[in-house]
Length: 134
Image (cartoon, rainbow, N blue to C red; front, side, top):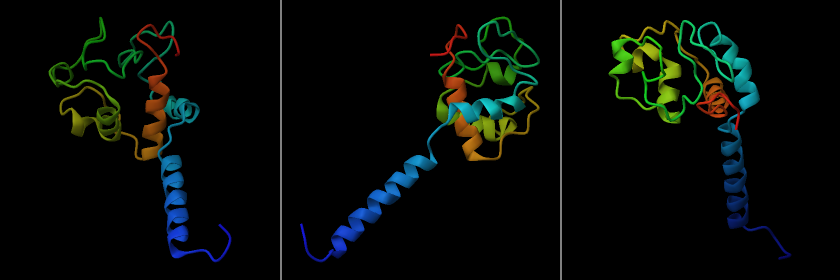
C-alpha cells in the first residue's frame, strides 16, 4: 500500500493508539498493589499463616460473601450487607468503606487513587482461601 496516507488510515492508527493507552491505564499491577497494601497491614493479614487482627484475614476475599470469614467478629452492617466481594464492589468499598457499608467497623478512610485501588485488588486476587498465591 504505497502512496499518500489517507485520513482513514490516520484515524485507524489514532484509534488503535488510544485503545492501547487506555488498556495500559487500567492495567492492574499486583507488585504495586503489595506496596499499597502496606496501608492495610495495620489491620489485615493475608497469605499463608495469616490470622485475624483488628480486621479479618483477606485470603480469598475476592469472590467471598461479606461478613463470612470464620471466627471474625463482624459488624452487623457488614454481615447483613448482602455483598459479595467482586472487583466492582471492592473498588467502591476501598474508595470509601463507610459510604459502601454504613455502620462498618472499618475506620480506614479509603484509598483516593484509582490506580492504588486497582493494584490492591490485583494483589488480593492472588490469594486463595488457603492463603496460597495462585
